Image (tube, rainbow over all chains, first blue to last red; front, side, top):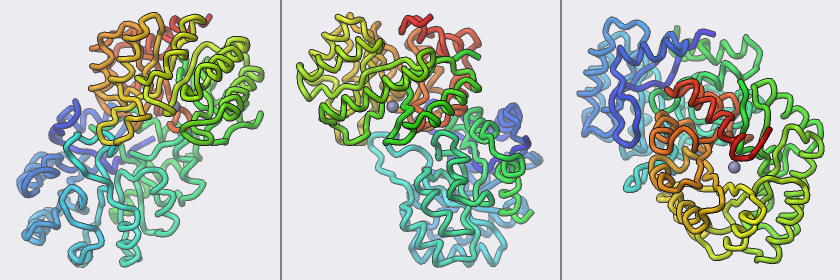
Length: 252
Length: 255
Ligand SMILES: [Zn+2]
């Protein structure tokens, strides 16, 4: 099965013993697990004062590596977000941007999120919302960063019913609640799990709305791959989740 | 691949009780190379602190699994230690008569609580393994009844002749591994939360290959994903074999 991974990262994460991948080591690692292409964002953009330097480094590091589609991070709490978006969008490889509202101190229901939607539509770029990066129970003890609330996500999506949005890191109950109500919402599988995860989700959710995401390096890539490749769902459905839905989302 | 899964809930939140469901689970397990499953019971079926009748019902269901598939399931007896010494004694006696091999503690009380004394005494007398729920609870202020890895270590030091499994490596994390390190009578199972990179290798480095046991926490986790936590780690094949089967076989004295 060819896999197109919606959810990978380069850079260092300070709170766990994760490998700090650069673009080359990430590609090699993903290839060993049968992942031929991946969307990749810079971890350095999560806690930095502003994501610009990390985005620039991402675009530099992925140049010439066709397997990696760079996905810059936009921080809507900062006055320069439009400039940052413009700078990133000047690179034709940038098809989507990633936002992390709860790491960057704004709500998805705030007006600036609607303004971002307008900007992205004007520039024909896609929106990826990182609902969480890690299980909240395992955050560093002094941090209090909850996932993007399902309610806020629902409100935002209801305001933009035609907007395709890819949500990363949702839990199983969140996917089961939101996706049937919002047909243009896609979700990656990374943090959703139950016995026979994919079949379990498909009982509620359209096969057009799920995408494979390994969340490398946070999660064991082989385990996330197994979630789909050993799911026992019809090959046609598995292929959609492995590649087709993400390609459609990106307009390929 | 030959696997023993030390942490399963074939019946979970009242689902999975039918013969057909259990047969299907056994068939699926066998297809994935899982030769035995330790059935821990529907430990949160009614509440976090279940009545004596509820405890008995949960264990009756586990006994039924063993009757249906005696060569597949290994039974652990769920206990609510807060019900007191007599209730615990009664339930343990039933479990021993049924050939259960261990006791399962969930979140009725913290493992440091005094009510654990008769539980651990019974475990020692009958040679039962104790599987204690554990999670690094720094973020969740429920330590009155939730057990931290440090609490399991305290339990293990208080009862050095009882063999204890600390559940949820991924829930306990690096901190949990370090808490468990000095307790030779303490093992850790590989279940808990999403499959975080690096913890399996860290646990083996600190505890040695002999004290890590494969556990899935089925059905809360997906079996192929749970297995790939081990097979997809950087550990060598011999270490993986120990985690997936040999350690559990020795600990539970399985053929
Ligand atoms: Zn469990």
